[in-house]
Amino acid sequence: MSQLAYRRVLLKLSGEALMGDEDYGIDPKVIHRLAAEVIEAQAAGAEVALVIGGGNIFRGAGLAAGGMDRVTGDQMGMLATVINALAMQDALEKLGAKVRVMSAIKINDVCEDYIRRRAIRHLEKGRITIFAAGTGNPFFTTDSGAALRAIEIGADLLLKATKVDGVYDSDPKKNPGATRFDRLSYDEVLGRDLQVMDTAAFALARDSDLPLRIFDMEQPGQLLRILKGEPIGTLVQG
Ligand code: UDP
Image 1 (tube, helix red, strand yellow):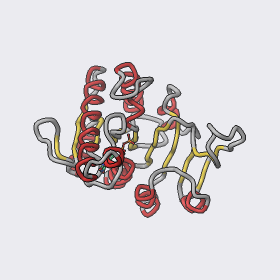
Image 2: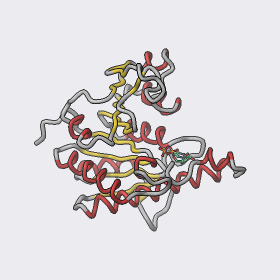
Image 3: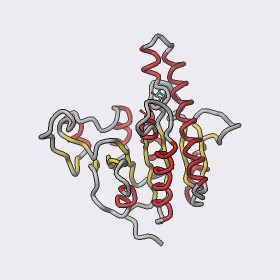
Image 4: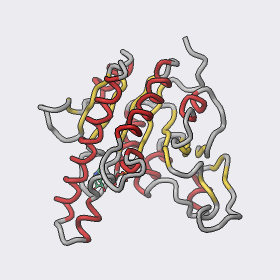
């Protein structure tokens, strides 16, 4: 078997990660590359679960700012994550992977319902398992969905892919002198008011001692290198 540092991981991708250089939706080339990297990680011996956001299509807060009822907007956002999950399922299957999509809201004609024990079974059988529709509740985000599912399935690590190569003491796009942290404790993140995940997601991770690694997945090959134990990005743990 593998020489990996982690056995079971959950990778959170934002919806925007699927857009590439587009303004909206999904760039087929980008989702293909991401799918190939996920398969590479899984082929190396990891059990890989995915949570994908919906921000490339709809966000409830944005819709509410335009006058829509917030709960309806959030439901649209959750459905957007299902669309992204189906696109990722297709991209993974085209590359030969076994995949299951499990949704937190019932849409039985297009995917399975999320059932924790079944999800763990899928992972044990080597199926890449995509958790769609976040937590299933409005006023949450897919970061919270990712933290929740990672804890439920007993993931060893929650990987959060971003466009920046880790957590900095200030915005590196605005401040060229910004310093990146290799490691942080949960308390340091809170004490320095650093943006790692939204508050609800971070609280869940901290309460369950779930280690987080924030990294840049636009750099090819990073996912597998992290699973092999390379200290890429920023590790947050107790
Ligand atoms: N959403 C929700 N509950 C959840 C997860 C997501 O209501 O548990 C909605 C919310 O409107 C959110 C949208 O789905 O804005 C898309 O998710 P998110 O913003 O987390 O996507 P990302 O920013 O990661 O692309």
